[in-house]
Image (cartoon, rainbow, N blue to C red; front, top):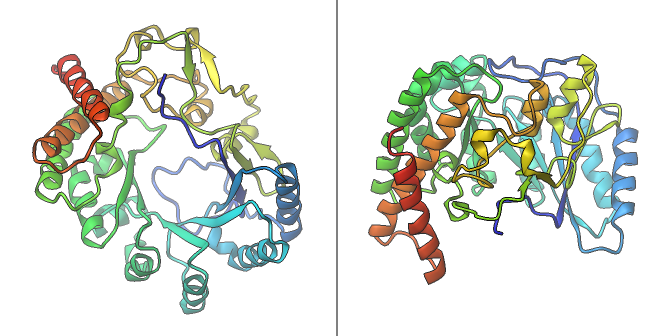
Length: 368
């Protein structure tokens, strides 16, 4: 059974450097902002414990600094980075920072550029100035896009699509490409998406599909990169967890407490119990409508977001379900067009699986 699953050979240690942020984005799920921050000693203790636990194995470790806005604690991040290198952990791969990009003065840019090989920054960018400023507190002009594109040319930007800006999705993605970035984009989790959003999403993805067909050199944004090669699984006795939560993701709050992933940190303040996290689940955990769906094992589901909403782990609202299917439908369209034009190279067995998946999706979701 071939299923999209996270890389089990890499452990991602997520360090919440601060619960504070200099922005207040419209879709932010972090309702527990505060002045709390992680101390250097707490971070050292976490890293020593984690690396000791896998000593002598082939596992690799990525350190992710996040927040709030982690760059508010740049001095501590730099000290943690230096500590990692002083210890010469054999399993260490690199450090990664998720940032809004607004706090990079010349000194910080110089330091980051000098350490760019294993200190990588992922920038949040929601598209054009209009879209970004609407979602992210008029912060567009505070970001040196050229610095990020030059320093980490392979790193894609993270775009979160809010309901109010869905009608400008195409403009936003294309703008990011024009700035020199690839795009990781998703519909904002946990918000109320109206039924009207599905029609808007179809229109915007159609526009993007046409853009990518005309510009085959551009890497598809993630909304048009749904996992077609996993469509049509017939073995359905268990259901796999999509992400690495509770398995290879080890997320630590500012006080050093461990969570399955960063999304679960918010529910601890609501006196909500964190549910057990399994690698595979009995098929009975799925809603009835999901058990026979052709997207079984391929449908992206965030158990952290559902925990925050106090929903079952693999739940989607009807609109969320429809919008996911539309993304698969649009992906099947653009991939078939790229296939016909010879823009993708596949092994014979991959070609068969791809065309079979495209045929299934086009037939199943034709009325969407």
